[in-house]
Each structure stands twice: as structure tokens, then as C-alpha cells.
Picture 1 (cartoon, protein in one colour):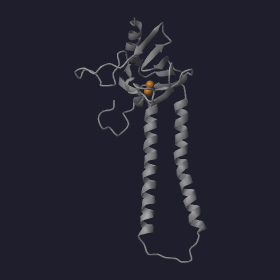
Picture 2 (cartoon, helix red, strand yellow; picture 1 turned 30 degrees about the horizontal axis):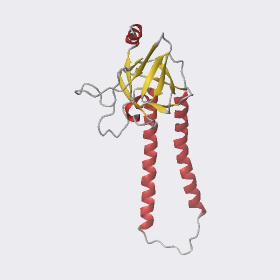
Picture 3 (cartoon, protein in one colour; picture 1 turned 90 degrees about the horizontal axis):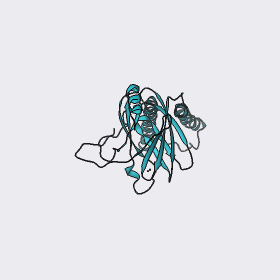
Picture 4 (spheres, helix red, strand yellow; picture 1 turned 45 degrees about the horizontal axis):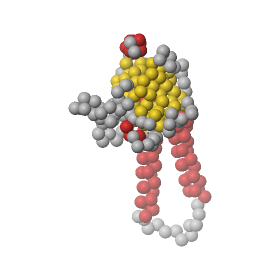
Length: 225
Ligand code: CUA
């Protein structure tokens, strides 16, 4: 989970988030190189005394500074496109979770099983025993090392089901059903928050996922009352 003054991504808990972090680092390096190069060129333009009264144009340098940025952009565009299609892919999900946004809480349905559905409200922070502003009364339980499909919708206004460590951020629209999928590759508790400004208590509808082994998941779903 995110802790105080963390300026980086949270640790990834899914292969897709790992890819997103790789792409971010790759793009950031290109950005830093470009910034350094351009600053150096601007500095050396200011601090020199080379003067050429007859220089009005130069086809060659214009050709170079048009083509160079174009090539640089391709190096960002192609990996970006690859990532976009990877994120959109559904690979035979084992289970489906439906999450419904409300003002101001989430509710969940495990449609593969009989009547497993519950509301998930934020709970009060008490004696350092839970996570302040991030914990809920009923957590999502999901099996790790399995492809999971998630269907996202809302009943009132637009919400957004966002869990950074899984690389998921999908809007919950009333009257629409959005779909995405992810693969949790380790056990743990993963936190998310709504990320569409959905009203007065927008900040108070967190998402909590407990990632456990498939054996324990089956046990949980069997004993669900
Ligand atoms: Cu729901 Cu912001």
C-alpha cells in the first residue's frame, strides 16, 4: 500500500502493472535525455559569440531537428500501443467479480456463485487497528495466480474502480457495463480508491482486495452465508 510521501508507484501485484511501470521508466528516461539535450543546446546558444550576418536559413539543420523528434516519438508510441492492447486483452478468466459504484460505497457480486453479494463501506479508524480512510467492513476476496475478470458499473453517478498495485482504473458508468481483467501474482491486501469526482464523500469509498490461495478462496466462498 502507499505510505507517507511515497513519490513512486506502489509495488506491482500483477504482470500488467509491472509492464506499466516498465513503460513509465522507459518514457521517463527518454524525457530526461531530451530535456538535458535541449537545455544544453539552449545554454550554448546563449553563451557564445559566433556571429554570421548572412545566415538566414539552413535546410540541413531543419531536416535534422524535424526528423529526430519524430523518431523519438516512435520509440514512445510503439511500446505505448503494445501496452494498450495488452491491457485490453481478456485471457480466459477463471472467475468474474462485478463491482457496482454507489454514492458512496461499492457493492460486489460474485455472479459465478449463488447469491454471494455484499456492500463494502469504509470503516472508522480505531486505535491503529485498521487502515485509516482505506479500510472497509466487507473486503473483496480473490484467488491469486488466476485470471480474474471484473465487470464495473454504477447506479447513480460516475465512479471509478481504481486499484494502483493491480494496474486497474476503469470508470463505473450508470447504464453501462465496463470490463477489464487482471492476474494477481502474490498474496496480500491491496487498496484502491474511487477516482472520479463523484460527490461529497468521494474520498470515502475505498476498495480493499484480499488476495489468497485458491484453496482458501474456495473455503471462503463455501462458508459464505
Ligand atoms: Cu465514487 Cu468518487
